[in-house]
Image 1 (spheres, one colour):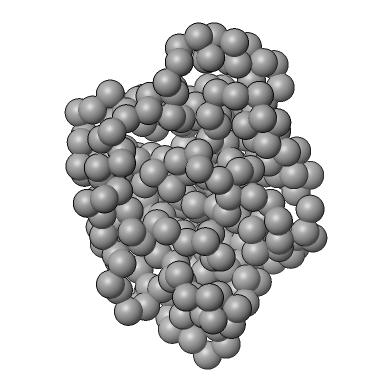
Image 2: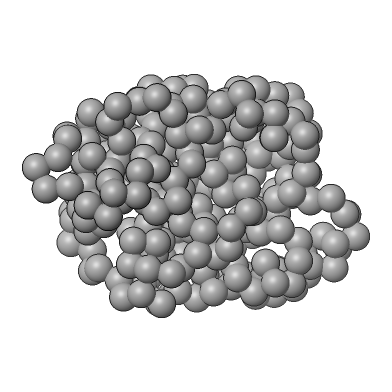
Length: 256
């Protein structure tokens, strides 16, 4: 079985990478999980996962004659993690279309694929993870502008047949804001609210220490909220071979 989820938001600063790794760690208690930093232009998952010094990243796999997929896979915190590099020249040399083959290869040996997507839908490279995924998890702060950005992600995903797995409210500082925004979200988003994650100094501390939140502070309020989100997220049983074939044949998207 395998199902691919894109974790997206439509804007920067929502805590998308933190959310991707936290969901991955929580889901890894039941499933084999592979996390891919598919934010090829503004990658930072490697800093969150303690992989800043690795030699081979996704960029090296996405060039003609480049490294094998296995060379960019690292076992960390109970998951397989594929980080992306931060070098601009490497990003420019990488061919985003090759991500289809990378994801297809990874799908053969995992239950859950989490694709940490770019902050905005600004290029073919940015939107490709959303197109490849079976479903998308939309990470939102509880504001009207963030809701609007998230709806753009859902609209684009739907146009390529990608469903909405649910929304995740993050960096919540004001319970009243959730009370105002949640009914609107339930009205417009197709998936359920997976959890409400409070703003937390523990999240910032985890980032400074190069560790995912659930490794740094597993019993924090934010950590418990991410576990709730993972428990709410039902993973569907898909045939790995069929999913891999779909990834390989996926239509390259146009820029929004």
